[in-house]
Length: 96
Image 1 (cartoon, rainbow, N blue to C red):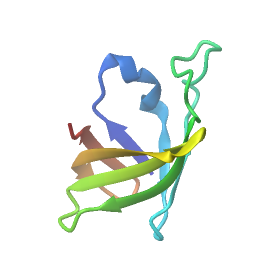
Image 2: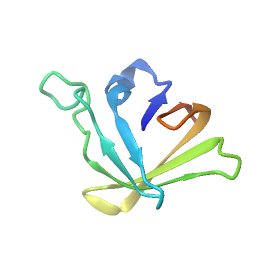
Image 3: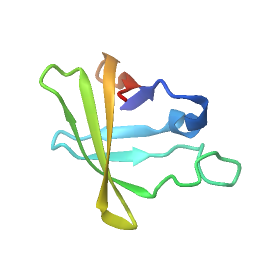
Image 4: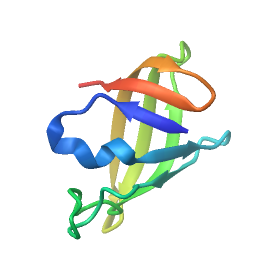
């Protein structure tokens, strides 16, 4: 499933990320071609290991959790307001 995010230009590398959301609340993340210092723009892709995702009861807010690979106590949360969704994609705006 593609998660399309309205992002500032500084987050260009996230535009080709593909999230695969599993029914058990886990997910995987493919960082796409725009990554790393070999011409990419995201030198730190892969430093966050995917953990879980969830939707609120109204299915209008998506919460994605990840952990810092160097410090497992550093749990990172991203919250997105869903603007449109279907079986293959989610469009969202970052919350906050």
